[in-house]
Each structure stands twice: as C-alpha cells, then as structure tokens.
Length: 239
Length: 134
Image 1 (tube, rainbow over the protein chains, first blue to last red):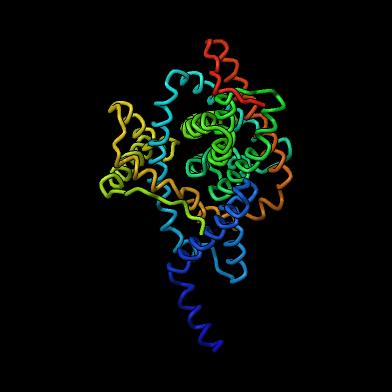
Image 2: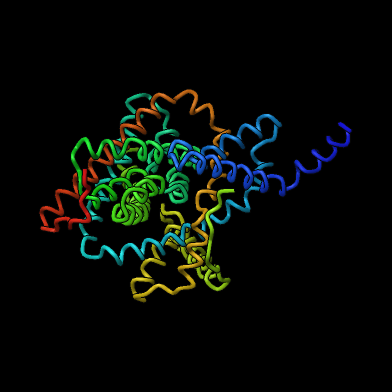
C-alpha cells in the first residue's frame, strides 16, 4: 500500500498537473478563509495561498522549479492580464476627466515618495542592494511591480510578497492615517489608497465609498505606469 | 467555495487582441532596450488606443473583466518563489518592516496632501457626495 502510494507520488510529482492543481486549490482555500473572515485585509488570500504552497513544497522536499513547471500555466496569464488593466484604467479615466491633471500630479509625487522613502529607510537600516531594488516598486500592483523588479535588477518573487504586505499595511492603517490628518475628500482618500497600496487599498476603498473606489482604481493603474517609467530614472541617479 | 461569479463571456478575438498588444509591447521594449516591462508597454498602448478610438468595445470589456476577476491568483506561482529568498526576509526583516510601514504612511500623506492642495488651487472643490461624513 505504502509502496503503491509512493509510486503514484513519484509519477505525479514530476507532472505539471500537480503544480497547477495545488496552486488553484491553495488559492481557493485562501479565498474561502478571506470570505469567512468578512474580507478582512489581514486574511489576504494570496498570502495564505503562498504560505500553504511554500509549506507544502518544503514538507515534500519539492524544489521550486518542479512546482513552477505546472504553475507556469497560471503565471503565463499575468502578461495579458497586465495589458487588460488598460480597460478599467480607461473606464475610470472617462469618469474623472476634469480632475485628471490633478490626479496625475498627485500620483507622480506619490510614486516617487513610495520608492524613495522605502529605499531610504531600508538603506539606513542596512538592507542589501537586492532587497532595496525589490522594495522599490512595492506600492505598485503586483503584475506590474514584478515586471519592474525584473527590469531594475530586483527579485520579482520577493517583490510579489512585499507588494502584498504593502497592500495589507495600507488597507489596515491607511484609513486611520487619513482620519488623523482630517482628510475628508473621498477623491484624495481614494487616490492616496490606490497609489500607496494598489489593489488591496482599492478593494478597501470600494468597501466604504464608490467615489473613493473609482479614484483608487484609477490611481492603481496610473501609478503602475508612472512607477514603471519613473523608477528606472530615479534608480539611475541613486545607484 | 467563495468564487466571484463571472457573468460574462471572454471572446477568443479579444484575448488575441490582448496577446497582440503584449507582443508589440515586448518587441518595443526589447527592441528599444527600454527598462519598461513589455506587458506595461502593451497596457499603455491599449490605453492610448482606447482614448484615440473614443470608446470601449463590449467584448473587450467582458474579456478584461473575466481575466482580471482572479488577477490575484495569477501572481501566486511567482510569490511562491519567495521560498528561494527566505534568507533575505530572515536576515533583513526589521529593515523591511520599518520601510514598508514608514513608506506606506508617507506615500498616503504625500499623495493625499498634494491632491488636496492642488484641488484647492484649481478651485475643484469636492461635491457633497465626495466628502466623508463623520
């Protein structure tokens, strides 16, 4: 019986089917926990899925490459999905045309602040160059941030995790920070949330105000574009 | 299972459109040696195309919606790759934690501050529904 089980495992562990299936199962487990927890940003489904999968791979002694041979089918869709972000960006752009120049200026400042302050703080605290470069795009939505990390010499997978953590931090403390400074304009609150903490901040904004959600969604897309263009230039000066 | 229902049809034609934009983006990015990821160039091009065209085809809207409804699933495989860099997290977690929290607070304040300042400057004051009631 055990021998039979072992034979099946040896066969499956080298097949792409297993990596693909566990990815979907782990993600749905994450989504289940997230919805049971009333969409609490601390129960981020991606973070839960990543923890489950890393644990599983370590327990079974499977290396990342073997897992990725299956999971790459999901990973491949990141490219077209990133292109598809132009669609919500365009829809939101139509709604806020008159305020657009002001939003763009705010996001440019926000984008530079996000990258420079993260690099500055981590550098003062003695982080390695690899970590600094992976931290730089952390406020950008994950698919774009990973591409940026790769382009500037960071570690895309580390960036993916830092991006999610940033989103959680922004969603949890963002509203409190904005209240503390008496910022009541939903437009500014949304733009700040979407710029600082991308999709997770946007989801949080949507829960409380439709106006904030629309502005956050626009800010998320624009900040992705802005950081992709701005960051290589800023890093060129720094490093 | 908590799965977001996708009440829309993804069409092969528009999936092809997205792939073509990505491909063109990759060609421009590598061809010109830009530090921009190819899919981001593709996204920028599609955004510009929609502005020039002045409208959003229903099929493209539905295809994008379908693809983006589980966007966060798509970066799970890459995220798992962090297992190869756990030593970085283990050695530098203090710097990373302070940087993430500090930078997030600063980014929120600078972005909202600039936005509030500029809307006042341009006289674009918020309407009643754009103000948070306490």
